[in-house]
Amino acid sequence: MLHRSMGAWGIAVAVAVAGCATDGTPREQRSAADRLAELEAPALKPVEPAPLGAAGVVVMRNAVVWTAAGQRHDPGFVVLRGERIEAVGAGEPPAVAGAHVIDVERRFVTPGLIDTHSHLGVYPSPSARAHADGNEMTSPNTADVWAEHGSWPQDPGFQRALAGGVTTLQVLAGSANLIGGRAVTLRTVPARGTRAMKFPGAPVGVKMACGENPKRVYGGRNQAPQTRMANVRGQRQAFLKAQKLVRELEAGKTPERDLASETLAGLLTGRLVAHVHCYRADDMLAFLAIADEFGFQVRSFHHALEAYKIADVLAARGISVSTWADWWGSKLEMFDGVPDNAALVAAAGGRAIIHSDSSRDIQRLNQEAAKALVAGQRAGLRLTEEDALRWVTANPAWALGIDGQTGTLEAGKRADVVVWDGHPLSVYGQARWVFVDGALRYDRTRPGAPWSDFELGQGAP
Image 1 (cartoon, helix red, strand yellow):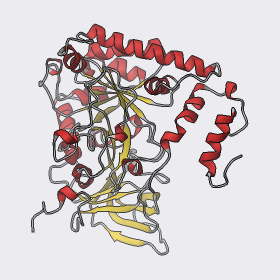
Image 2 (cartoon, rainbow, N blue to C red; image 1 turned 135 degrees about the vertical axis):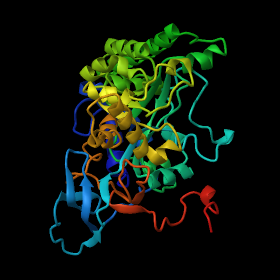
Image 3 (cartoon, one colour; image 1 turned 180 degrees about the vertical axis):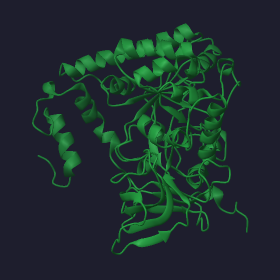
């Protein structure tokens, strides 16, 4: 008998345990993805309320509205109602009863910036061994760990990223392991626990790595993997085990819980999304062979300094490239990096993304996109400012599976909006106001109290 205080979630779990789904479907007829969702439901319950968005109405007028969806309205307007964008257009805004009207004085208005590759929270400031929670370097396969369990909301980097116009970021485990674990997509909002910062409904990413890092970490201990051969073997072995779990679930069996295999089974059933650290073109092609063997898709190759060498392959497969503007040369696998990598990917019809992988670069992601644009234009590629803006808005939203919710300024999407004091692709362009879910979270003229205790007393008097 169910206790009346269990609520909808408790009923769903109790019915699943009894042998049926909440719609009455017998367990043996449920898909493997549905079975996995039922198994993991207890681990995903909210612990604290998420920070509230806005309940009011804001009208921005007299703006240069850059939608990242192909339109630039000059002058234009944006209307925010609660947590959503209600209207975007050219000219004067419609009359909206009870609205707070802001004359933005011909400033640029863009979508909030999105970073697909961050380690904020898992490698927070101040940097200390006690804070290093981004790499579980005890096994080449740690698919069973989740970044959200190691991410620290008190990291001052979150508020600093917001001040740079970033409204959403994916926090990943490090790249020491072949399979580093589950990522988490967060909002730059203050909260006591990471789970309350999560982007609602965002697909969960899985971090994997190719190349030098895993073989250096474990080869240095005289254990596998010491070579790229063993890198691929280790990943194939892990997916073979996950494949067996999927088959058992599809057959209606109830196998013993295996957290690592459940993560990879999530990839095989399409519930989770693959994000892969790879620099060299041959490493990316080797990983694509693994994906083909086991029937899952790579959503984005990260860093991917040699993506330009296989830009046609990546574009044909619909795989995005999350890269830097100009990082290069700190390892041998980085020596063929070129500053026009993102531009070459875009010119080939691929989805280029500029990421940070840095607590500093995330504060100027707009400038990083501008650098990548200029590099491509100097190489003779026909690219526009619109392309560069999409590299840090619409394209990363797609890579994170949230492009239906954010990444462009369109009616119905989440009210993630930045008003800039200068051109967004200029070194003089600073975020003046940043809205997340319609709530004003940052005002450069009145930055407010720090979110983190480690920022107290750090500013100028």
